[in-house]
Amino acid sequence: MIYLWETSQKVFDIPIVAKIGYDFRYFELAFVYKQGLSKTYHVSDFRGSRLSNWQFSVYIPLSKRH
Image (cartoon, rainbow, N blue to C red; front, side, top):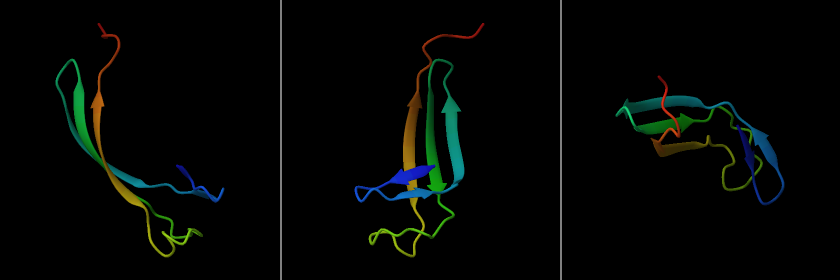
């Protein structure tokens, strides 16, 4: 994962991902949590901390497998 900020600084991080979801045959609902491993951010808002986030995803396939 590469994070980009307005100050044109790029930071590479490999987060740990935990996902829990359910497949309803025609679509899938899931909650995802990502915890970053790197603390080497040079942006003042994130200095000395790890980036993490929660996501809610809805996956609807455009075609069905047989």
